Length: 154
Image (tube, rainbow, N blue to C red; front, side):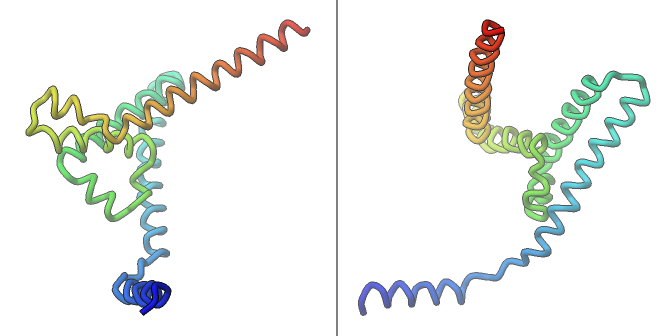
């Protein structure tokens, strides 16, 4: 059997054994769960505004509450079940980021608080933080360079 025939045979075998994913159902679940999370955030935001809190502080309060809820649900192993059901819908940036911090911390708790929790907490989120901070510094420097040049030309 030549390599091309064995590759095609293997591909046919994988196609038979791989289950078809219900794409429409998955998209629908991601849509309504993500929408529900956003709706909860909007309700919290509206409650803050009714209490005459400024808009910036309202956004901060919403972020803190959503992070706290996500971390708490991750600790109870409920957020992972929501993630399996909703897929990307549960990974709205703020809740997904909280989950990515808490999950490894819980997983490595048996190794101790310093080397386990402290060392492994940022295994998933660490590269995201490094890239985000690095990108913001680069964009900031480019902004300063071009903004100063336009000021001196005028």
